[in-house]
Image (cartoon, rainbow, N blue to C red; front, top):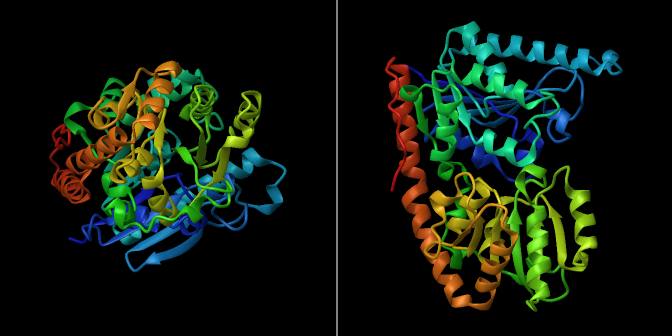
Length: 421
């Protein structure tokens, strides 16, 4: 029987996938040909300003390869309803649900996978139950810890309060045919919020990253030219990769930079990524007197990132996911908070330095230690790359995911499994 997969995920629209060269993070969804065809859908791509070329209208279909189609949804269905955004958005989403239902039935889609248990979870659950196909829910965060840290809902545009999001989380997770968390911490969160233990497992990040990050760091053609646009001469630098959003605690990176510079370490900080907190971070750098030492370089493609990571003096990770995986394969020295999944990869004094969550003094002390002792830093980086292959080897992860789908399609609930070394 031909297996086909529909993925509903709002991480990136088609334009962003192409411009950032993220195609491999999409095409890997076929699990090495296990799925004959995969349709990847961003239900409201034009809402985030990167994806569909026009804000209103019908969804746009793009061919990524013979086995992959990308669908960009719109923030509004009709130009004439432009001044009634809520009604227009509802019309757009009703339209895309109708089209997806028709696609699933016409193409004989075997399963629907969603990238989160919130908005995408509701949309995927609607299509899955209408068509009678299994729903797989990916959980890539511990929302309870995020709520405790920020005091805000994760998707405030759609859900105005934390209790509303919690209700949606439990509703979707309890009805999923398979819940796949990205790590043990997130799996425990999912189970405590309604996911059934016997229908839960772990799909780690390792097989989602671009293969250029797997290459040996010394084979990646390092070049100081990567930094020329930011600083007039090579500098030791701290690196953070991730969305510039409150939940990612990026402001702590700037505070740590200010502290280690106060201690006499001549380092810069390079922030890769973009987001709603950018302006606030610029102001913070100015307030702390380090604005000349912080470079906001925006979003960059995978080739650029894979070459830059091995050059970092220290990768600072308050809270990152796939970016921490990329840093690990790049053998970068890492200082991370003991938050979410990071302790599964970063073993203090062995594969990096793991410090208490939100302890700026501890993070600054560890960063200063790695700056002052380059040999120690390199030793940690090499051990981290070895740990990444033990925990996140793409071939092993693909095999595990194929096995989970096989059990799902045979009508047997997958055992709760943690992918261990």
